[in-house]
Image (cartoon, rainbow, N blue to C red; front, top):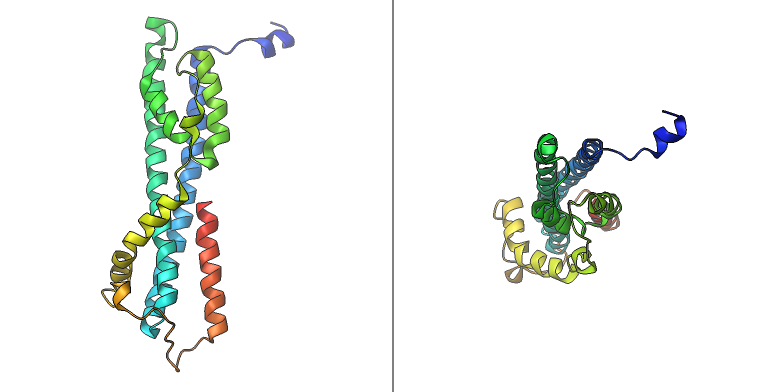
Amino acid sequence: MSLFEYFMKKPTPDEMVRKWTAGIRSQQRELERQANKIKMEEKKAEQSIKQLAKKGDVSSCKLLAKELVRSRKQRNRIATNKAQLSAISMELKRQQSMLKVVGNLQKSTQVMRSFHQLMSVPQMQRAMMEMSREMMKAGIIDEMTEDMMESLDDEDLEEEADEELDKVLAEVTNGMLGEIKDVPTGNVVEPAAELSEAESELDLEDMQKRLSALRS
């Protein structure tokens, strides 16, 4: 076989499955790294909330609690995305084991459903788009439509975050703070606080930015 023929040779179904499986593992590792980074920042945020609660700075506690709720939801979505990737990988392995019997890859509603979910994840869209095109050519899935790529509305996330603030504050502060509506929302900082107001605001803003950056 000439070099030209080697590069022009169409990949076999088995080779394509191996390529897709490797790509899925890569995406899973990236999701795991994201989840670990978010979890580390969450621990820092929880510690800051506890310190701010002791100072009576309810307003700052509420801001960090919102970021904490959103970050936890993001970790839950990452876990769901990893599960969807695992489902695709398992189905591909099943089909790979059947190649000798059926001779080609079969259309899969399981893979289609998983791609439906994953295509709405901004960080994964490019990789998933490329993989979906290859799978469409191989006959595993149908063409993805635009409505399958719509992401979750930010307003929904905001509403859900507000509903869980009380619960998170009570959890992190061991009951010191809970029902926000029953607590003054102004900053009540103790005179003996070690950090100045400007320094505290800078630390709070920095932590909010780190948590937000990890979710984007």
